[in-house]
Length: 303
Ligand code: NAI
Image 1: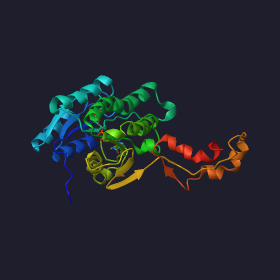
Image 2: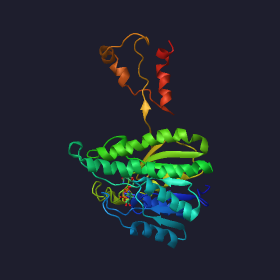
Image 3: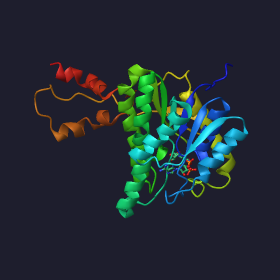
Image 4: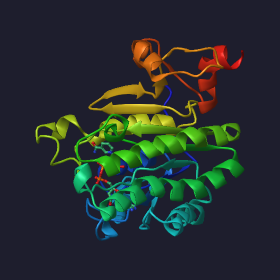
């Protein structure tokens, strides 16, 4: 088995001071990457800041013979994003890999969610990914090489009680990816999204304690490292994982049904009468872009 290596590659991992991001940083460095360990070092809800989170991971990497540098900026501002990328450029001259991983939680049921709780979570997960990815992709485009990973969640992909802010942000990342994959397709930049599962400080009061060993954060690292490697040539995909299980998920369309003749008005009763076909996911397909949806309408629009 040829080993996957990152010698000569420069990787940024955001939120790498704890949990899953820490594992990505350690494993990328162990396989030769020079790593920017970004972490604001705040609490689980985003409050505060502490440089020791990133410093500790850098110390672990260097103690093991790897190369890493710390960055303490928040991902949630354009200035922070620019500084994170600049840290990589100043230390190592380029950015080949970006893992957008930083995250916080402010859970509340929909009716109780405050504006502040909404804004903060969207700022870190969704805007934060934009703030870091834009300056990174600028460099990747010029270098004609890059690997970008966004971190979504099953809470956004499928839903979870009390996480409408988090779920919206996490699903929003899929929206960014769907557009970005098209815009950077000609520059050898691959962008993919993962939804990890791990026992971490983010989930330690959600999962039962006996899950601590089963949901080892390490189990998420191999997928991210593969997607971050030169060998990976898929882009625009979503992978869900945890406990050693890895699988693809996708937004798909059902075959649906064409009603009418492309000219006459269509009535709600016709939707009711065809609802089984409209609702069916029996023959589903993912789509490479939004434009592909027109293929279903061809019988109507070509008339
Ligand atoms: P964690 O709380 O252990 O780590 C998140 C890290 O992000 C922390 O070190 C924190 O200081 C850092 N961070 C927070 N806000 C930041 C900011 N503004 N700028 C820079 N760094 C910041 O959480 P965990 O579990 O390792 O989560 C990592 C990612 O995986 C997050 O995006 C999370 O939403 C996602 N995720 C985790 C799941 C799980 O089961 N643990 C499930 C689904 C998604």
